[in-house]
View 1: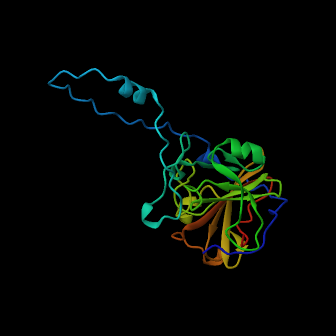
View 2: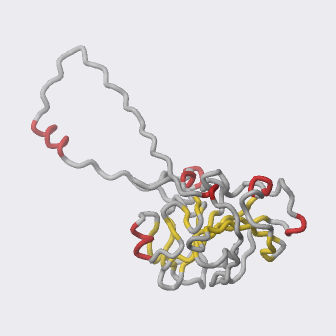
View 3: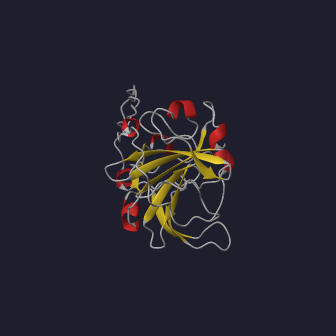
Length: 238
């Protein structure tokens, strides 16, 4: 499991790693559309609607009830209208889907993926300026400044991926050709990194083993994107 420790600021002074980033170019596929069944013609004439029926047809339908997260057998709710499901979020240096490190709170809210000023689920932790919508919280997380500016985005579960398919669950053998040399990430773990040199945006991949023990079949357990400073690949208790 990913280690827990206090880490309110990201590591600064990133060293240019000179690695390839073509595997993480931003590109989002088009949405699929579903067909509709064609109604069968009636064998008998259809009576003209009454005045009351016409009124009902023109009135707006009631909104469908929302599904809360954490429902066990209810499963994962669908993404809201116009939002990508977690599995379609593209990881690029400094961003997961449309959410970029460096965004202001207002810019992040405008994407539609967040709610604002939510009480923390752990006693003693401050109110969160931004929180992912219910259907995303088990897959992705967020670090913000006190004013809500986005510092980093984390990926905890398989689903979000780079254009080449790299994400949680990817092996070191698959990442070796595009990522940096393994680095000690603390707590017996290893980080490898991809950097976009144009604006110092990063992707960090975490493995739950030490650099000297990292094997080709070891798999990524956490992904973090940042801008300016190399990902620390840590999260605090809140």
